[in-house]
Image 1 (cartoon, rainbow, N blue to C red):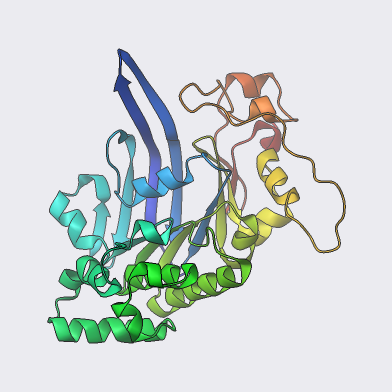
Image 2 (spheres, rainbow, N blue to C red):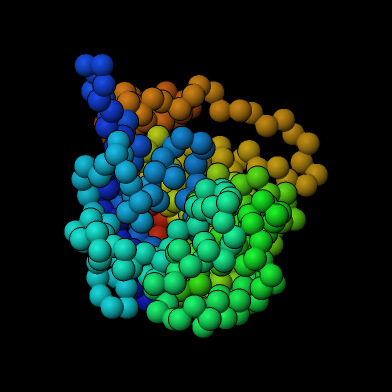
Length: 330
């Protein structure tokens, strides 16, 4: 259940991979003029096909960027309990102070987080010890108690990552991201490479942690079925831009953007043996995207205006925004 107010506000965010070499300069417009907000206590889903900019967006949101990725415009502001913070106006020390304690990140792929040659215990020390301010014995005791709440035995701390199953490693990364009690959690494809049973367990664990902490979550996954089951609202990305956003039930029952409609129509349904049509064409190059609506080369509803102008995000119903001239009657 969402509490009042927004904890995250992203305004006209632009983040490009700026490549320079061999006399050639080009910008990969991975996130190009994206605006949205996440409410307190909300689980906000971000969906879209591979290479649409989902992971780049959330890296930018948490300030985890390195060249050649650069923020070239817009703002990312968090309203934490101790005040409002524009993440790109903070000094490096201030960002370090809020990371993990206020803002945490469940990265894609557990082995990207856990050092394969160090015991799990040391990863917790590296990430969380200084934020919790406890002596070594008290810290280990607090971590073991947190693992127990997440149905993990304390012996996990003595294991090397390779000794754990994929599902256990993913649960450990969730424990790592939440042990400091953050207000905002970003989860990037947390169920990738897991079988459906383990996926359900991991998602259930994430929702359980959210409720216990009263935290807000951005959940990134291309799996629309996951969003249908756990998200409060969903934003759909295509070619670096947000093209539709709505409460989950409304988005799935009445999608207004042709791309969203295709994603939902492609979901398998029990007993449905009808042939699923693939979407023609391919996503555009983000180094040289087409003029106008970036979806127009693949859109069955495209007309001249779509090829000339960028459709603005328009609220067509309460909480339902869409960037599509066909949907807004233009």
